[in-house]
Length: 346
Image (tube, rainbow, N blue to C red; front, side):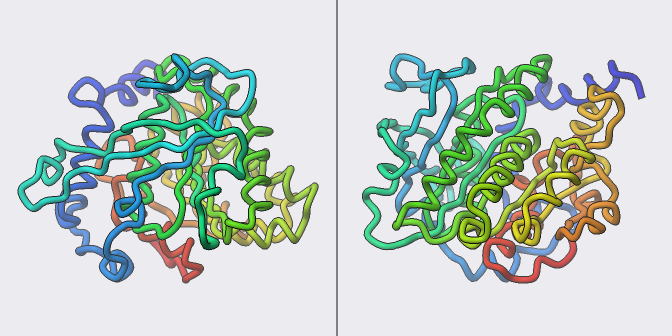
């Protein structure tokens, strides 16, 4: 497979419509339209009516991006690396969910209304009157701050998460040919992510912490978890709920070594993989032919003692890298992992 062909494959969706536009349509469409042959909403989705984020549309923000104009307006935070961790609370505007709304045909979406910056991780949950679970979303390659933040909202809304939702956003140039900058920025942000997770663990307002990391976002996530476990051990691990790696863009050997160093945290990991993930195929090529975890064979990952969902047959597109957002079955996998229920196969 030539590099040129693979680059054309990866960039193809942008030539007909934005990836986010397609995802908006998929997420707003009835489940029967999302996947040919898929059943309607799962029992889990049907039972959990009304997302908490829709009732209180506040998104917690932790980012190593440099603010733009003090984060007083879009684009809020840019692609440059900040001198330190930036924390904030964003007020979101949910899409209109009326029967005949623009959202019903994919033309309306979540948006950021305003952002209020805060000084410490504890300040993010200062308003809480009871302990609540926190869902932390760590985005992947080729993302602006805004697309990452709104993906966090779509994810929380799509799985009907009951608790606080946070986006951890590292500096991405949001350009196809800046993969190297993105990869290095993600790894550079690992200490900041550790700082955030450690702060959440220490907060009396936090119950359990769940992490969903997509693509390259799996790199700083695994490193942060490894550092936390090395420093705090079982007490910290007990506060972590589900850890979901969706299409993880991680070197298989590095990942295997890390799994062996995080103790009981490894039993909380769910890997969503797809051997036909074209974005990871390109990443593997650029990495010298080393298989990425998200494109590894199902049995190879299961031998590490992890919960593995092979989503190779779930996607209908040519890239299959965003199934955690666009596929109702994969969203149900994440929901079950968070609930601590058997995940099953996909």
